[in-house]
Length: 243
Image (cartoon, rainbow, N blue to C red; front, side):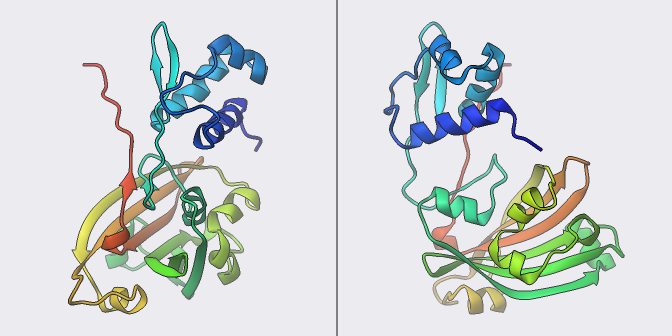
């Protein structure tokens, strides 16, 4: 499925802001100038700008224009408001990513697993344990559950690279939204073993549990991501709604 024009404009403006083409606190070119630059409609441009506002890159100022308010985050950060693969997040933060698959298997969801994952009991899934490295440091241990019928042909080799790249570019799946819960949980022996953490220094983990849906309204993934607490940072840009 081809990308919408506003998404292309959004990504181009976002890249220019990140690369300091527009300096911090500087106004972007006027709306009319950007419309001519991208040869698009006013509504299309405004839709792209609204995404930048949501991401915390710009602020619209009535009567003045659109101001760049982006400031790079020096520590590795994951986003709350977007669905981003580990590889995408790592590259955005300027790090070298690497993924090791510890376990790749298939089974049917049990009654107990159904309560945790949201998949009905008996659902056939791929279960994958993946260890994510940033610059050769193990930071995240993922427990992935993928709906088998929605992700045909998934392999260990694909899981070592990018599952989302496979979903979007090979299976042409449209990933729409993800429900997330963040908790602090006790460190397990598996966490300690693979994330190289000393139990005397750490006794808890930052845990992000997510249920992710495609454009057909199907929940195709449940993932529990267990993060080293000393490198855990999620970023969001909150917008106050009018009362």
